[in-house]
Length: 398
Image (cartoon, rainbow, N blue to C red):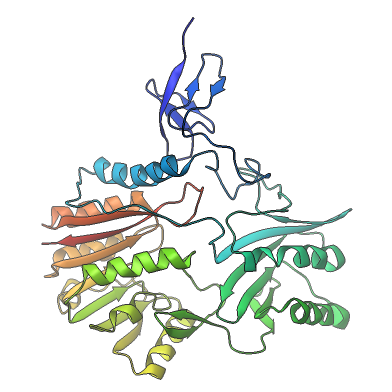
């Protein structure tokens, strides 16, 4: 009788993989799977901490211990580089965010015959898992789940509601998309709700964009000790600890550069940290985000020049890039292919590239390598704990 196959690694979508290429749902490195599919847990297979796992789509890897989880995040980044024949001169220590550290998340809610459900959706399904505990959300966010469930039970409609929660300086900002507030009674109920549970901001999007219904004082998020206004739907790093690692690496990579182009700069996560040593051009396409960053920089008199520009349609050209001592990139998941071509054609010699998608990063990195850059440093980052979503920092020189 066969002893079964050992799982050698965890694949990109969270399945365990054997030497023969067999994919095993929820398999962990060191587990053994029989020919009939029976899984025998190995030394890195642990009991999931949450009662909702694996139904809840918020996590895919709670069965993996810290070592296996760290190896998964590392492999995702290293294998993406290897697929493009890229090797890092230095592989920095992988960073994993701890449990209950997520400061932003989008949940889903629905009024039901028995009340309401709220939580993440099941993987590959529209069914909402009613969240009664969560090991990834910051406690300040999870504390709002119960009251939100009660709100939907009393005033929710027939359609699902998307609930965006963000932990800001003043508390939790909440945006309800798909929630219909008709009439004075519904509006007053929302105001009472926001006041009673101490929200920093409550917004409602009835398919015409978010409208603020409660905000006692302007909501901000502090970036490198600079309070920045927080527009609706603005991007924010998912954890504070992860942000510190990304910003710390960027500052170390670009130390000594007197002028830096921060491309896809967002609210100024990197710009404000780098402005202590350099003059920074912060380029961002989202208008509200750009204006928030510009206002914060102007208020503090920082050497940050904010530029409103869509780098997908109109990337900085090679001659423009060449004016800077260094470049920082933090693009969306699709990467920054057209912008990277311009960097490759420029006189730039130092590039820090922060990415939330190892695959698109590797394709862009290949362009830089072919233009004479070398990958001096690479760090895998797992801010989305127990998830297959992986990030990284990297540094290129030539």
